[in-house]
Image (tube, rainbow, N blue to C red):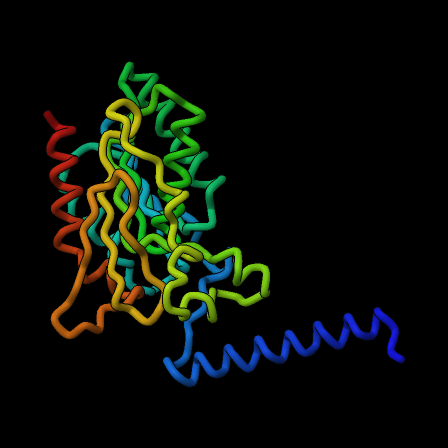
Length: 259
């Protein structure tokens, strides 16, 4: 009779085969699944667009690696289009670089304090970058109560699920495709609530028709669901699809900061 250890190994082998079979079945039904980018996949960790010692501080968190020659994502494009000639500091940061983004934000805050200016932030992101923008907002609100986040702008915020992490499935390849399991990879718990003191506004864009991973309405945010007429809007292009809205939101916020 096999020992308990052999039985355990056999169970693990069968579970692995079942998971692999399910993954292949899902991919066969819906097409190839793009994995979430790995934390060290980006060649460029931070791209400083504008640097000043006065004005708002804007951090846009990208969901995919920033590679040389690659076109910018919709969040970065919206930020650049919205800036105009306003004095400010703006940077695009790869979503996994929290330490780097917090260090840059802290440096920019200190420059403003040296000029007797209240540090005011705008945090934006798409996908994993949107979740990171929310997490950074929460951390800043906890660390430094003198910093005001005038806008948190999230687009299709997602995160890897506990289920897929436990199963060792990179990129939520299985759980993000199971109907009714949205709670396992949306980012409800990452979103801080506006309090009219430290976080003045949170605007969230999301869509739910994609067979790939997607976001959802966020508690206490100004939520906007996106739908295109073809019904083919997917997670990868939702920030480009919403570009006009994102530019408008950023310009409106920057316009209020000028006053």
